[in-house]
Length: 118
Image 1 (cartoon, helix red, strand yellow):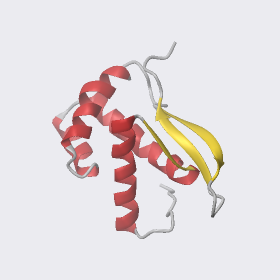
Image 2 (cartoon, helix red, strand yellow):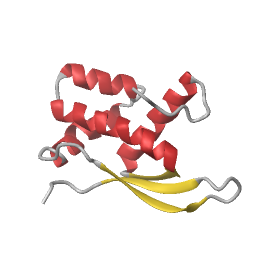
Image 3 (cartoon, helix red, strand yellow):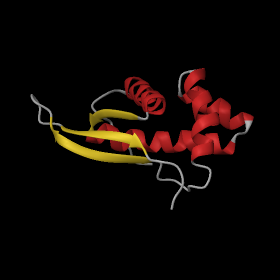
Image 4 (cartoon, one colour):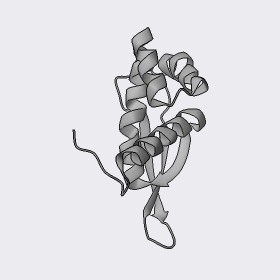
């Protein structure tokens, strides 16, 4: 699987992506750079898929990735899994903003989409 290194070593990158995933799950919208948003989208989709599975193994995998944040895991399994029950992927949306002052990194808002597909 190809992934972006984001200029960090493995432990720092994994921790950063786990924190961004938890923040997106809890707040349902965050502002970050485009490359981080594209990378975190994969993990949010995986967590919601675990929530839709609902098994004990899936709950443990989600907790392990999200650094044992029980509040975020509860929201995934109780709220988001029900919201996206009839949706097969595509749980996030990326909206582009303008560049950040200082380093001209493209900023985006990544958010969870609404529930069912019409």
